[in-house]
Length: 69
Image 1 (cartoon, rainbow, N blue to C red):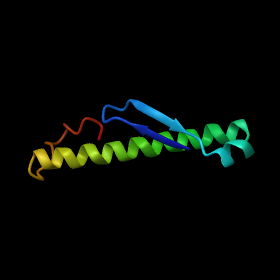
Image 2: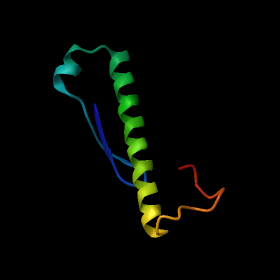
Image 3: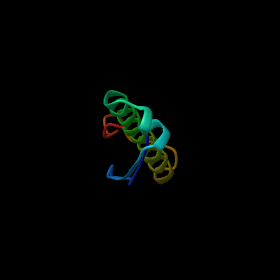
């Protein structure tokens, strides 16, 4: 399962590998989709942190202002 999305968290595409989809049961597809979504969110948060670091010159955000990152 592959999920692509935007920086605001909007999912733009969801792709299933045909071989996996044909052999999988419902629970496996749900598990793979959840794992792909969580992977997308992890990468999104990493990119957000990188951008914040670029904007702040590597200083990061003040304590308590991490906005859940």
